[in-house]
Image (tube, rainbow, N blue to C red; front, side, top):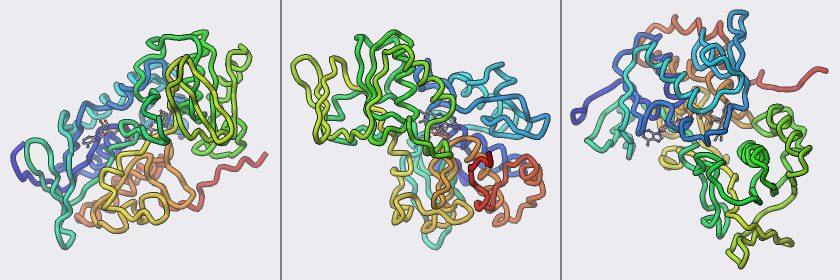
Length: 372
Ligand SMILES: Cc1cc2nc3c(=O)[nH]c(=O)nc-3n(C[C@H](O)[C@H](O)[C@H](O)COP(=O)(O)OP(=O)(O)OC[C@H]3O[C@@H](n4cnc5c(N)ncnc54)[C@H](O)[C@@H]3O)c2cc1C
């Protein structure tokens, strides 16, 4: 790439969000855009522990108007591609590669975005990469969360093993494990360890397994609850709720895990499933964080940096959280529409996204209640 090569749009990251929004830009006829990916397409999914599967099910339902929950573009189905309901990360990365191939857009792999510099008077962005500087009128941030774990939630957390650092649960030696954090990642770790005949204790701040909330962004998914039931039936899973872990220390015989009033000793390195910091923290100064999350306009543009858009699980509007693919894919067209309008591009091709339920502008309908 030459110095100061200029683009209309640069997308940072080639995961589900980056590839999905790239497909919409292609459908709009936009050619002068680039996706910059520091590793390879679908890298985060490739880094999932080998045994980890999607919690959201895939089903070949799009012929009858219901897009596969894990599809990122219309008329595709990971369920058909792999004949599986719960894909592995590796399988999903292959699906993303196929989508990029089909749409024929270029992904610059092995290019890490190191710094974003907004130009004065909203004249675009300088994007710093190892080989030089690129310029873009608009920037879409799609760098995700998985590769940005929170490794320091409490003192001594560095003694623990974060679940994103596990390649395969079969690589861990020992028979007894303590997992800190009992939401999706923690319960997935518990399931895989119990399936390997290990004795597992899960400590969780709230006891997420008992949370009846209807939104799977807040409570456990049905798939995870089913697997937790299996674990429980083996007698090898101990769930302990209302525990805020405050510190971990090494002691003779292993690791001591402290809450305000209790102490547990684990003979093996405690497993940290307390979540992710997220990539937006890399460019935190370009957002307003006064609500506790990145402030975005109705078009998912930073409320303080015009031209900077966000796609993916970090998108949030009040209590509407977009942390699953079936949720955040509905905002790709919103972002593409905003950019197309400013570039004077015909937005008619976006109608197909509206018909497929992938163009969600009105968030008042995002309510998960079940009438029965
Ligand atoms: C453990 C876990 C399990 C999940 N399970 C599900 C599930 O079952 N179903 C579901 O719908 N959602 C699930 N999610 C939600 C998840 O956030 C999304 O599925 C998905 O990974 C988000 O896609 P993304 O494209 O935003 O991020 P990613 O897939 O992480 O893609 C970001 C890409 O950006 C690249 N990148 C990062 N930084 C830079 C940089 N500076 N320069 C260039 N490139 C960069 C990365 O290499 C990566 O390829 C899960 C999340 C986690 C953490």
